[in-house]
Amino acid sequence: MKPELLKIAALAGDGIGPEVMREALKVLGAVEKKFHLHLSITAAPVGWAGIDAAGQALPDATLALCKLSDAILFGSVGLPDRDPTIPKEQRPERAALLRIRKEFGLFANLRPVQLPKALAHACPLRPERQGDGIDILVVRELTGGMYFGQPKKTEVIAVPDAQDGNLHPAMRAIDTMVYTTPEIERIAHVAFQAARLRRKKVTSIDKANVLENGVLWRDVVTRVAKAYPDVALEHMFVDNGAMQLVLRPTQFDVLLCENMFGDILSDEAAALAGSLGMLPSASLGATSGERTFGFFEPAGGTAPDIAGKDLANPIAQILSVALMFRYSFGRNDVALAIEAAVGKTIAAGLRTGDIFSAAETGARKVGTREMGDAITAAVAAG
Image 1 (spheres, rainbow, N blue to C red):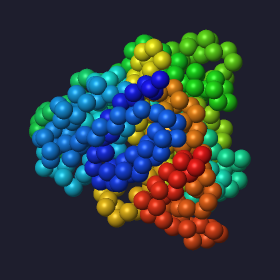
Image 2 (tube, rainbow, N blue to C red; image 1 turned 180 degrees about the horizontal axis):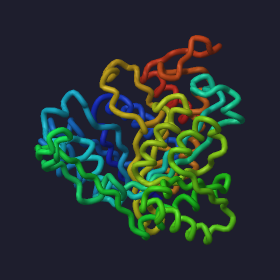
Image 3 (cartoon, helix red, strand yellow; image 1 turned 120 degrees about the vertical axis):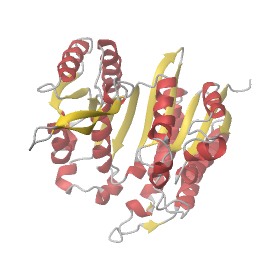
């Protein structure tokens, strides 16, 4: 019997996006053969590539493709040097990324942060702070909070001058932080369910001492925790959480965060793995039957300064493929095979520039293509 068709929209985007996506597609080809899968992978422009091709960061045809797909494999978008040429509402980060999250209800972002022993040298922390290894899952709420709250605007108002008291025009920017009970409940359930499969601890991040949002967040998470008596819950203010990630990261298992706090802390946590080039992420929506629609991307950005130079680390993009199989397709076996291939390649001493150290014995610096080829070969070899 022919295997079920899995439809994937491959949106490479800008900067290093096309380079790392190329290596991920190689791995997908090896996976398809190794596991006798039936994949339909369709590429489409997004970001500045979408603007150049169709005048929109998220062209209508690209969005239509995504709606016909089972999952989205995404590269990265944004070219800061070109941002001043268009209104901020049309820039890729807003017009593509935030719109995709909203269109598909991608409310849960999962970012695993793991430091392989072989890359201990790449971690900015001293060995004694790394303990027996760093393994954190950041669960970030993705469709609420300050990024989506209304009103959101920049306006001109009259303010009194500090010296003469006369009114003068000034600009005022307004961003509104809004959360409802259901939004907090559903992301809390994601965190507790994930913790059950790990070390059974959730650290919920808030700012309940000064923010109304924080008070509601803490109250709702505490109530949801009662449905998971096997999972330990602790609350932590976001400023202390940022400090503890540096002082003692091994204390954390699952970090549960609202949108903006999760954005900041997940990047801080990512640095513990030595490079953003090592960190994948999954953004998940509602589950229908056995499928969960997802959007899978590297944690890093477009890195235009190294684009086209065969310098980018493709591992985050490749590990995003693993997350896609785990969360959207329910194929943990495939995910484990990809992750094992990455581990084998790292253990063999291959390093892109971001994780290379001349002091490391047996390490060899390689480019984007060679790293992707090595991981693809490891998948094929099993």
